[in-house]
Amino acid sequence: MGRDSDILVGLDLGTKKIAVAVAERAPENPDKAQIIGIGQAPSRGLRKGMIVNLDQAVSSVSDAIADAESMLSGIKISRAVVAFSGIDVKCHVLKGKISLGRSPRQIMAEDIERVIETALSELQLPPSSCCLHSIPIKYAIDGNSGIDNPLEMTGIRLEVELTALVIPTTVAQNVVNCVEKAGVSVVGLVLKPVAEALGTLSADERAMGASLVAIGGGTTSVSIFSEGHMVHAAEIPVGGDHITNDISCVMKIPFAIAEELKKDIDVDPKAETMETDGTLTVEHRGRKRELGKEEVGEIMASRLDELFADSIVPSLKAIQKAGLPTDVILTGGVMMTQGIVPFADSYLGTSVRVGVPVLQEEMQRGRNDCRYSAVSGIIVYLMERRKNPFAYVEAPMSIFKNIATGKSSKRMKGARRPSQSPLKSFARNARELFRELF
Image 1 (cartoon, one colour):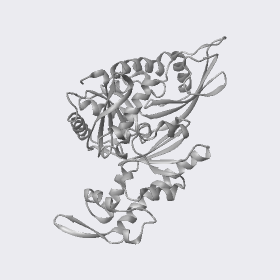
Image 2: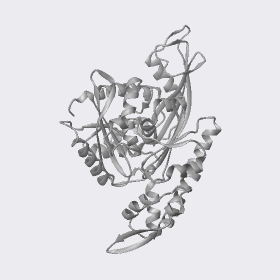
Image 3: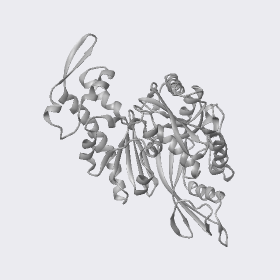
Image 4: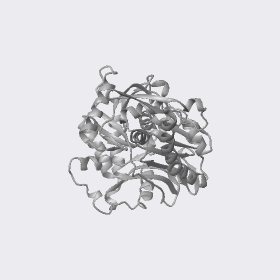
């Protein structure tokens, strides 16, 4: 990869498309990165965000990489941080505390590692699962809570409350295997709810508190932020493809035609009759058919009704009962549907808007809308980790790569012993990752 240390690459492994964002850090201001190219290719071999055909998925990743490289001058992409869906993700809020000694002293990075490790020790994981992200919500020093970053502050007792996102290890291993078969080394993994939130919500919005609902092709993710920190994340295995499939089955038309058909439908429940009446003409195998717009609209509304009423609304109501902010920002490819905001508003009953990528002005036209929030969010994620390595603590990549190459991992076979601390592995791997990326 040309200009190695200054190039950042994010790869979004989606059900509808594979997207690649390439950014360059300015030597004079290394804390900021400018997106210099967005590549994409249709996604094949994925269903509901999961890899179901490895060869097809590898080919799609290769196509997206080639598309990104075609926009760059002399840059070859050899490594990337990958965002992917985890429909089996489990979210846990954990607490930990440690003593810093009998007398006050300055808090070091090792102390932060240790208190996070203490919190994670409360998590009882089966051998088939791993904690991919540990995201501190707040720290407390000597009982004084609400501290964002305790590094170099002074005290005798350090506490942390964090969000832990747990996934099946094999899901991440399949992602790593797929991307590396396409010739790209995976140097980091990000769950979609994290990438989509960072790609859509500004720092101010995260500080004020907001709920992000990202409805993509195969999945829907919910991310909740309060006082600048992620406090909840979830993924639902329902997305835009389910709407398309419903139209295809009920109207007895091919999936591809149904996909185009839904672009002409307005799902606004208050839409004028003249907008929902009429017919749509489709042609298949040389035959033309007239389909009623109202009937197609009812099919779409039925699936959206199920998604909002059965999954999204209950999640947000639980958050509301906990006293967290419930202003909702929508993103993802389904947000291109006509009338989706008033439809969502009719269910959520709160402030609703469609979010665009926070880096939109840096992204090329046509590849800078809500469909590209996740891939741009990977760049935001990398820059935030550069400023504070403990903002998003990743599991060491060796866990997934050891499995991918057929090597056994003792850590995954039984109870964790103190000498096998994931935070010690994190610290070692973090140093290696930052040497590679920065």
